[in-house]
Amino acid sequence: MKKMLIVFILFLVLITSFQTTILSSAEPTQDSEELRLQGMLMNMLTPYIAKDLNNYYYPKILKDFSPNVTPWKIEVIETRRVNRFRGFILEITFEIEPTDGGHWVPVGKDRMTYEISYGPEVKLINHTHLKTYKYPPELYCPLLQ
Image (tube, rainbow, N blue to C red; front, side):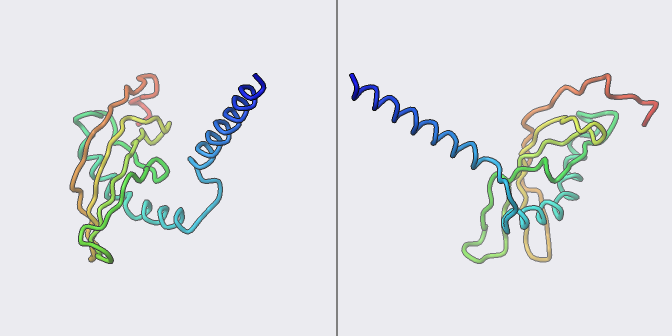
C-alpha cells in the first residue's frame, strides 16, 4: 500500500512539473534576439497584411469600417525557405485577428501565407478566412465616424 501511495505522489509531482513547464514556455517572459527579429518582421509586413485584409473584409464582411491589424495580434505559424538552404525566397504563415481599431474588438480570424523575396517583394500566396466574429452593435456609432 505504501508503494502505491509513493508511486501516486511521484506521478502527481511529475504531472504538475510537466504542466508547469508547458504553461511557462507558452509565452516568453523576457526579450530575446528572436522576439526582436519577429517584432521587426511584423512591423515591416503589417502594411501588406492590412491591405490584403481590407480587400477581403470591406465591404463583403464589414460594411461600416475597415479592419485594423496590430503587430501583437499576429502569430507566426510556420516559416520555410522555398529554394533550399540559404535561399532568399521565404514563406511565412500567420494567424491574424483583425480588430475594429477603436475598441480593439476582434472581428475575425484569418490564416495568411506570404512569399517574401529579395527586392524586397512581398506577395500573398494563400488566404484562408477561419472565422467571422459577431461585432457587438452597441459599439458601432455612425455619428462618431
